[in-house]
Structures are given as structure tokens and as C-alpha cells.
Length: 418
Image (tube, rainbow, N blue to C red; front, top):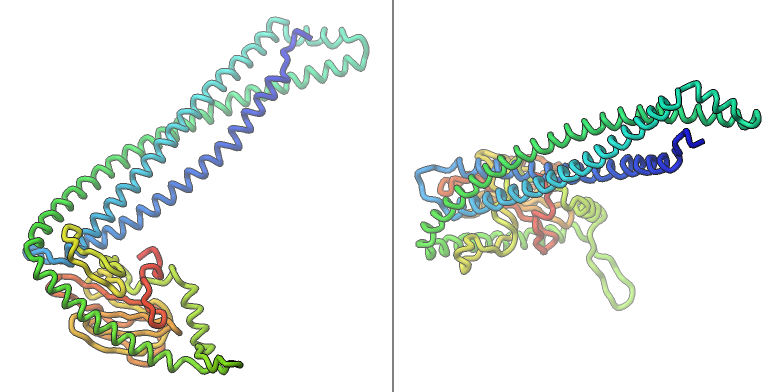
């Protein structure tokens, strides 16, 4: 039997290697593709936000001085671009990891291909050295009995099949290796393009930061004036705040009933079934509510914030969020509800308040209003045209969201995409 190679150990190792390559590699590649897809989606959304911010800034008059509002928009634009660059860095790192894995895989497959070729060459050489089919017949006929002769014949057949499979495996491995090389080159080209794109983003970021520093230098000499402007805005916001509290108190009375309790508890107030059902539906949509504008970016956040980081003593408090959008943009309701109030205030334009059970949404800084008190609105229904501020050269909608008398951060309720 020394004439034929002992295939058992090699076959087992060969099969184990195949299983590892076939099972582990697709899992790794799938995970990488998922990460790559997430990064690409994130970058796409950030680029849309950046384009919207660029549009807001470019719509302002070029020859006038930058206002505080425009500086905040520029600050937001810089932070978005920095996030895009960070996302690109993550993409580049992921591509480099895939390139390294590809190089390793090509090295393993190349070594495997060489082993397969050597094994196949040895098999051909052994067959040639032993005169091919003649020695195989002698091997069968030399069996001590018929049963062992049959076993030797089967062995020869299996050996021939194994050699045929070895040839197929060599061809398959060579093909896979070529595909790996092609994919690796694609990854390298993709990385090269991404690096060039990242470099362009860094150049734009540098320009924007220069522009930011120039604007800051001009605004720093107007600290008193800025504080006065902010104080006036806060005064207007307080007036709106009082109006909202008043509206909510009146509306909550209309949609509540007294429920008698036993014992010493007296009676308690509860929402009507209709109001409760609408509230529950509204609440289930937290994080996925549609935006109140088709296109826009939040540039003034909820709560207390510092509009100019270089001037930390200048602070603003926002009961909602301010969304910069395009000129003549239409405001739309974020959820079905009923119009409870339409009013108008200095610095805030026309205001519409819509109730959604115990929840209320407020849309301020409107020029024209398309609805009237008592109207029942469907989700994304148009409310009115958003006011364009001539001084700031900006169109922005002020949005507030309340649960009873408790202010909510609208950004947490809106869908993540604008």
C-alpha cells in the first residue's frame, strides 16, 4: 500500500480549513457590511443637514454684517462638518481593516493553493512512476482473495475521485484568490477616494472656522447690544409661555371628567377616554414624529445654552427648538389634533397651538395662517407660511411641545431625519 499516498490526515485538515474559511469569513464580511452601511447612512444624513445649513447662510445678504443668529447657524454648520469628518475617519478605519483582512486572506489562500498544487503534482508523479493503469491492475490482482480485491478496486476508484476533486479545488481556489485580489483593489480605490473627499471637507472646515473667528471678533464688541437683544427675546418668550399655560389650563378642563373615589380621597380628575386614547397614540410616536417643515435644521436647541461659546456669560433659554428652513416654507402639524388657539405676538409673529389629548404643540413665527380655531388637523396638515426675518435674513420656525404644563424637548420627539 506504500505506492498510494495516505490521504486521511490531509483530507481531514483540508476539510477543516474549508469549513473555517466558508463559515467564518461570510460572518466577518456581513458584520463589516452592516457597519459600512450604518456609516454611509449617517454620512448621508449629515451631508443633507450640511447642505440645508449652507443654503440658509447663502440666502443672507453678502454685504451686511453677520448677526448672532447667522453665527449660531455657522456654529451648527461647523459642528455638522466636524461630525462628517469623524464619520469619514471611521469609514477609512473600517476600509483599512477590510484591506488588512483581505491581505491576510490572500496570503492564506495563496499558501493553500501552493499546497494543493504540490499535492496534486506528487499524485501525478506517483502515478507516472508506477506505470499508471498497469500497476493498478497488478495491485488488484495481487490481492490474497476476491473480497480484498474488490476493496482494493474501490480504493483505486476513491483515489481517482479524490485526485479529480483536487484538480477542481485547485481551480476553485485560484478563482477565489483572483476575486479576493479584485475586491482588495476596489477597497484600496475606495479608500483613496474617501481620503481625497475627507481632505476637501477639512479645507472647507478651515474656511468656515476662519469665517467664524472674524464674526466673533465683530460681535465681541457688541456684547451689551447682544445682551439687550436676548433680553427682549426672553421677554417675548415669557409672554408666550404665560399664554400657553393659560390655554393648556382651559383646554385640560374641557377634556377631563371628575371621577368619584371611595373613602376619604374625594374626587379625582381624569382625562376623557377620547383624550386619553389620543394622548397614548401621540406618546407611542415619540422619536418618529414627522418634522414640522419639509426641509430644515435645528440651530437653536431646547433649554439653556450659550449662543457664543467665546462669551460664556451670554446665555439663552429656549422653551422649544428653532428650525431654520427655506424662504416661504410652510409649517405643518406633527400629529393629528385640534387647533385651540391662534394669536399674534411681537417678535414671534402669528402663533398656532394644537392639542393632541394632554399633549400640545406650538408653532410660532408664522406670517400667514391657513387654519382656524376648532379645525381638526391630520398629521402633516399645513398650518401656515413661516415668517422671513429681514434683519437676520432667515426663515425659522419656533416649535414647542408640552405634556400638560410640562415642557418637552421637541428634538427627542421628532424623527431623526429632517
